Length: 374
Image (spheres, rainbow, N blue to C red):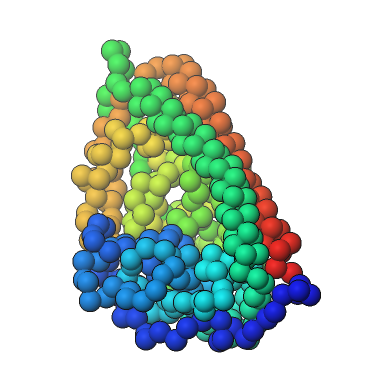
């Protein structure tokens, strides 16, 4: 607390305004006249054309999410969305942007769903002279803009690398003179996974038998090992035929369709969920070439047509078997794989750099807020 600042209870820091009507999430529009501000991460969650829902009081305001704990600064006409979205109109003694940054500096403990406004009511709000509030708000605006630019540069580098990879993937997978063209079922045994017996619960405590779920498939063509589940010896005996090798390619076939990859050595012989299948490839096919094929639009367009559309989309193995695959000699496949692996590694590195940059940017912002408000 700053010695030369005065402090008032939170409930005295905001004006009383009537409760605003909320637009239901099912009624959000992708475009419309009035932006919807809810408690989601993005500033604008959707749009509405209903003028009766429009916020009718002074702006700017601060919007607080009772469930998400997100804090937003809003200085435009808007509609509120979803229960638990609270509009906070600060009193005249408080600069709205200063108030926004102060609330962002507050670390709220977790009370569960839609109870965090109660925690705000326990805090005191600082009120330095208005000129100092405005100076602080300008300083934080400028500092946060520079920090956001660092993140934007990292995001652009990643987007550029992904675009280059997709262009090279498209060029590499386009059939060329001399390539063979076969249906997937002609060059691979397509075998489904197996669900555990009804009523059996997967366990997190390690056993000799790992069980791979679609939730474990990551976005880099492999499997996340951080939350692998296990089955008992007895259950393994019942489904022991439904395992996967590091030489196979997996593809998700229910719910999430077409997520593919190759399992790491640590999962050799693990059991595979019924919501995925494995491709046991002919010896004249390189597994990573086939994996890259499953990442291409040539593959994705075909399975989109072949997938049974329902509340739980499914791709039958018999339909997957008729997907058409064009491929060159094994040596040329391996040459293509080497080129794509190099580009893919760069994308993965930039993805890791972006995650690190995001973490560092968030830490820098919190350090600035702590420096000013503590």
